[in-house]
Length: 324
Image (tube, rainbow, N blue to C red):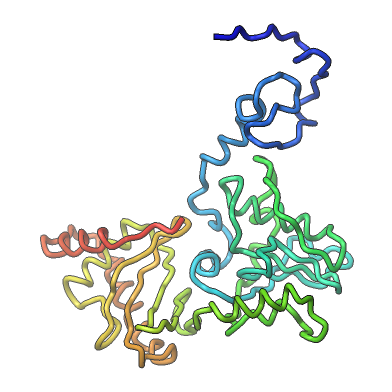
C-alpha cells in the first residue's frame, strides 16, 4: 500500500488554504478547494452531503395552500399561481408567478418585462425543496430580464420559501389546458421554446381542479378518469378514517367509482379514485363534497378500529405508493 504523503498545515505543497466562508461547492470527488488534499466529499462537502441525506419530508409545511403546492409539484401538468413576497416586489419586477414547469426544464425565467416565472417541478439538490426554490427565486429576482435562471447545487444553508413568501397571501392555482403561458406572444417565439411547447402540450393530461373541496384534481386518461385528492391530515389518522368508511358507508364517490389506493407525496397522503370515462370534473363536485362530510365524521372518531376496519386499513396501506 502506498504511503500517504505528509501534509502541512497549509495543505498540499504550494496550495494555500482558504477560510470556510470562501470555499465554493465542487464535485464530490474533486479536490476540496480549501487545499487540504482530501476530496470535497470527505472535507468541506460533508455538511452538504448531510443536508442531502436529511430530506425535509414536508417542504411546503407552513405555506398557504400546502396541499396545492404538493399537487402542482406531483400531479398537475400545467398550472400557475401568483406569489406574494414579504415586503413587496423589488423595483423592476412587476410580478412573480409559480409555474408547474418551464421550457427546457429551466428552474426559473426572468421575462423581458422583468416578471419572474418560478418552476416547481425540478430536482432538489439540498434535500429541502423549499430551500432550493428560494435560492432559485432569489437568483431570478437579480437575473437580467430576458434570461433563464440556470440550475445549480444549492448551499446547505440559506432561506426557504417560508422566509420569502407572505404567509397571509392566498394561494390560488389556475390550471391550464396547455403551456401557452410560457410565451405571452407566440409571434417571434424562440424556435427551441416553441418546439418544447409543442412537445409539452402533446404530453399533458387534461386536468381540472375541483371548486367545492380543497386540493382535489380530476384528470382524464385514455382508459379511465381519476380523482386525486391531496389531504392535510396526519397519515395514520387519515388511514383510520378511510378504513372506517371502507368498512361502513363506503369510500366510493358514486356508482362505478372506486378508491384504488393512495400516494405519499412530500409528507402528505393523496387518495386516488378510479372514475368512469364518462364522469366529468363537474360531475365529481357533489359526490366529492358529500364524501368530505363523511370523512370529517370518520376523522372525528377515536373509537378503536373493529376487526373489519383493521382489515380494510391493511388493504389501504398495501395500496400506497410513495412519490417523494
